[in-house]
Image (cartoon, rainbow, N blue to C red; front, side):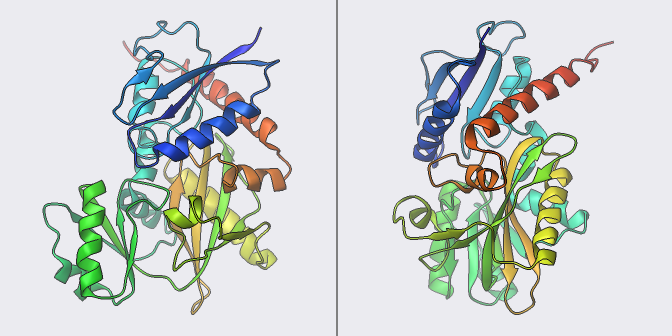
Amino acid sequence: MKTRVAVLYGGRSGEHEISLRSAKTVIGALDPERYEVVEIFISKEGKWSPRHIVPEPGANADIDVVFPVLHGTFGEDGTVQGLLELADLPYVGPGVLASSLSMDKDAMKRICRERNLPVVDHLTLTRECLDWRIVAARFGYPMFVKPANLGSSVGISKVHNDDELRRALETAASYDRKIVVERAIQGREFECAVLGNETPEASLPCEIFPSRDFYDYEDKYILDKARTQIPADLTAEQTEELRRLAVESYKAVGCEGMARVDFLLEASTGLLYINEINTIPGFTSISMYPRMWDYSGLPLPRLVDRLIQLALERHKARQATRFSL
Protein backbone atom coordinates (compact mmCIF):
# COMPACT_ATOMS: atom_id res chain seq x y z
CA MET A 1 0.00 0.00 0.00
CA LYS A 2 1.34 3.42 -0.97
CA THR A 3 2.11 6.07 1.64
CA ARG A 4 -0.13 9.07 1.06
CA VAL A 5 1.97 12.24 1.28
CA ALA A 6 0.27 15.62 1.42
CA VAL A 7 2.64 18.27 0.00
CA LEU A 8 1.73 21.73 1.32
CA TYR A 9 3.07 24.60 -0.76
CA GLY A 10 2.59 28.23 -1.73
CA GLY A 11 1.50 30.22 1.29
CA ARG A 12 1.09 33.78 2.56
CA SER A 13 4.74 34.70 2.45
CA GLY A 14 7.29 36.77 0.57
CA GLU A 15 8.80 33.39 -0.34
CA HIS A 16 5.66 32.11 -2.09
CA GLU A 17 7.31 31.65 -5.49
CA ILE A 18 10.29 29.81 -3.98
CA SER A 19 7.85 27.42 -2.30
CA LEU A 20 6.30 26.58 -5.67
CA ARG A 21 9.70 25.67 -7.09
CA SER A 22 10.70 23.67 -4.01
CA ALA A 23 7.42 21.72 -4.04
CA LYS A 24 7.93 20.78 -7.69
CA THR A 25 11.33 19.28 -6.79
CA VAL A 26 9.98 17.38 -3.77
CA ILE A 27 7.03 15.96 -5.72
CA GLY A 28 9.34 14.90 -8.52
CA ALA A 29 11.56 13.05 -6.04
CA LEU A 30 8.72 10.99 -4.53
CA ASP A 31 8.74 7.49 -6.04
CA PRO A 32 5.27 6.96 -7.58
CA GLU A 33 5.60 3.22 -6.86
CA ARG A 34 5.78 3.96 -3.13
CA TYR A 35 3.98 7.26 -2.63
CA GLU A 36 0.64 8.78 -3.53
CA VAL A 37 0.95 12.56 -3.62
CA VAL A 38 -1.85 14.79 -2.36
CA GLU A 39 -1.09 18.33 -3.50
CA ILE A 40 -2.46 21.14 -1.33
CA PHE A 41 -1.83 24.66 -2.63
CA ILE A 42 -2.16 27.78 -0.47
CA SER A 43 -2.56 31.06 -2.35
CA LYS A 44 -0.89 34.32 -1.42
CA GLU A 45 -4.24 35.33 0.10
CA GLY A 46 -4.29 32.21 2.28
CA LYS A 47 -6.90 30.24 0.34
CA TRP A 48 -6.39 26.45 0.34
CA SER A 49 -7.00 24.40 -2.79
CA PRO A 50 -8.35 21.85 -3.47
CA ARG A 51 -8.91 21.07 0.25
CA HIS A 52 -8.05 22.00 3.83
CA ILE A 53 -6.43 19.96 6.55
CA VAL A 54 -9.01 19.65 9.31
CA PRO A 55 -7.52 20.34 12.80
CA GLU A 56 -9.15 17.30 14.34
CA PRO A 57 -7.58 13.86 15.04
CA GLY A 58 -8.81 11.26 12.57
CA ALA A 59 -10.45 13.78 10.24
CA ASN A 60 -7.82 13.46 7.49
CA ALA A 61 -7.96 9.74 6.81
CA ASP A 62 -6.59 10.07 3.27
CA ILE A 63 -3.26 11.52 4.53
CA ASP A 64 -0.50 9.43 6.11
CA VAL A 65 2.15 12.16 6.41
CA VAL A 66 2.46 15.84 5.51
CA PHE A 67 5.47 17.37 3.77
CA PRO A 68 5.26 21.15 4.36
CA VAL A 69 7.20 23.02 1.68
CA LEU A 70 6.12 26.42 2.99
CA HIS A 71 8.99 28.87 3.36
CA GLY A 72 8.78 31.88 5.63
CA THR A 73 5.77 33.36 7.42
CA PHE A 74 2.73 31.12 8.05
CA GLY A 75 4.68 28.01 7.11
CA GLU A 76 8.12 27.91 8.66
CA ASP A 77 7.28 29.76 11.87
CA GLY A 78 5.33 27.13 13.80
CA THR A 79 1.84 28.15 12.67
CA VAL A 80 1.25 25.31 10.20
CA GLN A 81 3.08 22.93 12.52
CA GLY A 82 0.54 23.80 15.21
CA LEU A 83 -2.31 22.99 12.84
CA LEU A 84 -0.74 19.62 12.03
CA GLU A 85 -0.31 18.87 15.73
CA LEU A 86 -4.00 19.59 16.30
CA ALA A 87 -4.83 17.27 13.39
CA ASP A 88 -2.57 14.57 14.91
CA LEU A 89 -0.77 14.15 11.58
CA PRO A 90 2.89 13.19 11.13
CA TYR A 91 4.82 15.92 9.32
CA VAL A 92 8.30 16.52 7.95
CA GLY A 93 10.57 18.99 9.69
CA PRO A 94 10.83 20.56 13.15
CA GLY A 95 7.92 21.02 15.52
CA VAL A 96 6.14 24.14 16.72
CA LEU A 97 8.72 25.50 19.17
CA ALA A 98 11.81 24.78 17.09
CA SER A 99 10.18 26.26 14.00
CA SER A 100 9.14 29.41 15.85
CA LEU A 101 12.50 29.89 17.56
CA SER A 102 14.51 29.30 14.40
CA MET A 103 12.34 31.64 12.34
CA ASP A 104 12.80 34.48 14.81
CA LYS A 105 16.39 35.63 14.26
CA ASP A 106 16.47 37.43 17.60
CA ALA A 107 15.14 34.47 19.62
CA MET A 108 17.43 32.01 17.81
CA LYS A 109 20.49 34.11 18.61
CA ARG A 110 19.48 34.41 22.26
CA ILE A 111 19.08 30.64 22.61
CA CYS A 112 22.41 29.98 20.90
CA ARG A 113 24.18 32.54 23.06
CA GLU A 114 22.71 30.87 26.18
CA ARG A 115 24.39 27.64 24.98
CA ASN A 116 27.70 29.48 24.46
CA LEU A 117 27.40 29.11 20.69
CA PRO A 118 28.91 31.95 18.61
CA VAL A 119 26.46 34.46 17.11
CA VAL A 120 27.01 37.96 15.74
CA ASP A 121 26.31 40.89 18.04
CA HIS A 122 22.85 42.29 17.26
CA LEU A 123 20.20 44.77 18.31
CA THR A 124 16.42 44.26 18.10
CA LEU A 125 13.87 47.00 17.38
CA THR A 126 10.12 47.05 16.80
CA ARG A 127 8.12 48.74 14.07
CA GLU A 128 6.71 51.12 16.71
CA CYS A 129 10.17 52.30 17.78
CA LEU A 130 12.46 52.63 14.77
CA ASP A 131 15.03 55.03 16.18
CA TRP A 132 17.91 54.82 13.70
CA ARG A 133 20.13 56.90 16.00
CA ILE A 134 20.18 54.09 18.60
CA VAL A 135 21.37 51.69 15.92
CA ALA A 136 23.95 54.06 14.47
CA ALA A 137 25.42 54.60 17.95
CA ARG A 138 25.65 50.85 18.60
CA PHE A 139 27.37 49.63 15.42
CA GLY A 140 29.82 51.04 12.95
CA TYR A 141 29.04 50.86 9.25
CA PRO A 142 28.48 48.64 7.38
CA MET A 143 25.69 46.73 9.14
CA PHE A 144 22.80 44.46 8.18
CA VAL A 145 19.12 45.23 8.74
CA LYS A 146 16.71 42.27 8.64
CA PRO A 147 13.07 41.44 9.30
CA ALA A 148 13.23 39.08 12.29
CA ASN A 149 10.85 36.50 10.79
CA LEU A 150 11.53 35.94 7.11
CA GLY A 151 13.89 33.95 4.90
CA SER A 152 15.50 33.89 1.45
CA SER A 153 17.06 37.30 2.29
CA VAL A 154 13.70 39.00 1.66
CA GLY A 155 13.72 42.53 3.13
CA ILE A 156 17.41 42.39 4.13
CA SER A 157 19.68 45.38 3.47
CA LYS A 158 23.37 46.03 3.92
CA VAL A 159 23.75 49.68 4.91
CA HIS A 160 26.75 51.99 4.75
CA ASN A 161 25.45 55.34 6.02
CA ASP A 162 22.62 57.02 7.93
CA ASP A 163 20.35 57.52 4.91
CA GLU A 164 20.63 53.86 3.89
CA LEU A 165 19.98 52.82 7.49
CA ARG A 166 16.74 54.82 7.71
CA ARG A 167 15.47 53.36 4.43
CA ALA A 168 16.50 49.83 5.40
CA LEU A 169 14.66 50.01 8.73
CA GLU A 170 11.50 51.09 6.91
CA THR A 171 11.87 48.26 4.39
CA ALA A 172 12.41 45.62 7.07
CA ALA A 173 9.49 47.01 9.10
CA SER A 174 7.19 46.54 6.11
CA TYR A 175 7.82 42.77 6.34
CA ASP A 176 7.81 42.32 10.13
CA ARG A 177 7.07 44.36 13.25
CA LYS A 178 10.33 43.05 14.77
CA ILE A 179 13.64 44.09 13.17
CA VAL A 180 17.14 42.75 13.79
CA VAL A 181 20.27 44.81 13.13
CA GLU A 182 23.72 43.17 13.12
CA ARG A 183 27.24 44.34 12.65
CA ALA A 184 28.48 43.23 9.24
CA ILE A 185 30.97 40.37 9.21
CA GLN A 186 33.62 40.76 6.53
CA GLY A 187 34.56 37.30 5.40
CA ARG A 188 33.13 34.12 3.88
CA GLU A 189 29.67 32.48 3.85
CA PHE A 190 28.98 28.80 4.43
CA GLU A 191 26.00 26.48 4.75
CA CYS A 192 25.60 23.07 6.37
CA ALA A 193 22.67 20.64 6.15
CA VAL A 194 21.48 18.79 9.26
CA LEU A 195 19.24 15.70 9.30
CA GLY A 196 17.79 13.59 12.11
CA ASN A 197 15.70 13.47 15.27
CA GLU A 198 17.43 12.43 18.51
CA THR A 199 20.81 11.86 16.84
CA PRO A 200 21.16 14.48 14.10
CA GLU A 201 23.99 14.40 11.57
CA ALA A 202 25.61 17.18 9.56
CA SER A 203 26.52 17.05 5.89
CA LEU A 204 29.74 18.29 4.41
CA PRO A 205 29.44 22.09 4.23
CA CYS A 206 29.41 24.27 1.13
CA GLU A 207 30.72 27.77 0.54
CA ILE A 208 28.66 30.51 -1.10
CA PHE A 209 30.35 33.05 -3.39
CA PRO A 210 27.83 35.89 -3.91
CA SER A 211 27.96 37.91 -7.11
CA ARG A 212 26.72 40.98 -5.26
CA ASP A 213 27.63 42.77 -2.04
CA PHE A 214 25.92 39.95 -0.15
CA TYR A 215 23.83 36.85 -0.92
CA ASP A 216 20.48 38.58 -1.38
CA TYR A 217 17.18 37.40 -2.91
CA GLU A 218 18.11 38.40 -6.47
CA ASP A 219 21.48 36.68 -6.19
CA LYS A 220 19.83 33.49 -4.89
CA TYR A 221 16.94 33.18 -7.30
CA ILE A 222 17.09 35.63 -10.23
CA LEU A 223 20.58 36.55 -11.42
CA ASP A 224 22.03 33.03 -11.48
CA LYS A 225 25.54 34.42 -10.99
CA ALA A 226 26.42 33.32 -7.44
CA ARG A 227 28.81 30.38 -7.20
CA THR A 228 28.91 27.54 -4.70
CA GLN A 229 31.56 25.02 -3.79
CA ILE A 230 31.02 21.59 -2.21
CA PRO A 231 32.90 20.66 -0.16
CA ALA A 232 33.92 24.04 1.17
CA ASP A 233 37.61 24.89 1.03
CA LEU A 234 38.26 24.62 4.76
CA THR A 235 40.82 22.82 6.86
CA ALA A 236 39.78 19.51 8.38
CA GLU A 237 39.58 21.22 11.77
CA GLN A 238 37.42 24.07 10.46
CA THR A 239 35.10 21.62 8.69
CA GLU A 240 34.58 19.55 11.82
CA GLU A 241 34.00 22.65 13.95
CA LEU A 242 31.44 23.98 11.49
CA ARG A 243 29.62 20.64 11.42
CA ARG A 244 29.72 20.47 15.23
CA LEU A 245 28.24 23.95 15.55
CA ALA A 246 25.55 23.08 13.00
CA VAL A 247 24.43 20.09 15.08
CA GLU A 248 24.71 21.96 18.39
CA SER A 249 22.62 24.91 17.19
CA TYR A 250 20.07 22.46 15.70
CA LYS A 251 19.79 20.75 19.08
CA ALA A 252 19.76 24.04 21.01
CA VAL A 253 16.49 25.18 19.42
CA GLY A 254 15.04 21.65 19.49
CA CYS A 255 15.02 20.90 15.77
CA GLU A 256 13.93 17.52 14.42
CA GLY A 257 13.79 16.22 10.87
CA MET A 258 15.82 18.79 8.99
CA ALA A 259 17.36 22.25 8.95
CA ARG A 260 20.04 24.18 7.12
CA VAL A 261 22.43 26.20 9.26
CA ASP A 262 24.17 29.21 7.72
CA PHE A 263 27.56 30.48 8.89
CA LEU A 264 29.91 33.43 8.56
CA LEU A 265 33.70 33.11 8.84
CA GLU A 266 35.25 36.44 9.82
CA ALA A 267 38.40 37.17 7.83
CA SER A 268 40.11 39.30 10.47
CA THR A 269 39.67 36.86 13.38
CA GLY A 270 39.11 33.45 11.80
CA LEU A 271 36.03 33.03 14.00
CA LEU A 272 32.93 31.13 12.86
CA TYR A 273 29.52 32.63 13.61
CA ILE A 274 26.12 30.94 13.36
CA ASN A 275 24.05 33.22 11.16
CA GLU A 276 20.64 31.56 10.69
CA ILE A 277 18.77 28.26 11.07
CA ASN A 278 16.34 27.45 8.26
CA THR A 279 13.86 24.75 9.27
CA ILE A 280 12.27 24.32 5.83
CA PRO A 281 15.25 24.92 3.55
CA GLY A 282 14.83 25.36 -0.16
CA PHE A 283 14.40 22.34 -2.40
CA THR A 284 14.71 24.15 -5.73
CA SER A 285 17.12 23.02 -8.43
CA ILE A 286 19.78 25.35 -7.02
CA SER A 287 19.07 24.85 -3.31
CA MET A 288 22.01 23.76 -1.24
CA TYR A 289 20.28 21.56 1.33
CA PRO A 290 19.62 18.65 -1.07
CA ARG A 291 22.86 19.31 -2.95
CA MET A 292 24.95 19.04 0.23
CA TRP A 293 23.30 15.74 1.14
CA ASP A 294 23.74 14.47 -2.40
CA TYR A 295 27.48 15.19 -2.19
CA SER A 296 27.53 13.57 1.26
CA GLY A 297 26.10 10.34 -0.19
CA LEU A 298 22.35 10.82 0.19
CA PRO A 299 20.73 11.62 -3.20
CA LEU A 300 17.43 13.49 -3.34
CA PRO A 301 15.01 10.50 -3.58
CA ARG A 302 16.68 8.84 -0.58
CA LEU A 303 16.76 12.15 1.28
CA VAL A 304 13.00 12.59 0.81
CA ASP A 305 12.47 8.97 1.93
CA ARG A 306 14.54 9.63 5.05
CA LEU A 307 12.66 12.81 5.91
CA ILE A 308 9.32 11.00 5.67
CA GLN A 309 10.68 8.15 7.78
CA LEU A 310 11.86 10.60 10.44
CA ALA A 311 8.41 12.24 10.48
CA LEU A 312 6.67 8.90 10.97
CA GLU A 313 9.14 7.82 13.68
CA ARG A 314 8.65 11.05 15.64
CA HIS A 315 4.87 10.78 15.39
CA LYS A 316 4.94 7.17 16.59
CA ALA A 317 7.08 8.14 19.58
CA ARG A 318 4.68 10.98 20.37
CA GLN A 319 1.80 8.52 20.68
CA ALA A 320 3.27 7.39 24.02
CA THR A 321 2.66 10.88 25.45
CA ARG A 322 -0.37 11.39 27.72
CA PHE A 323 -2.38 14.53 26.96
CA SER A 324 -5.05 14.17 29.64
CA LEU A 325 -5.51 12.70 33.11
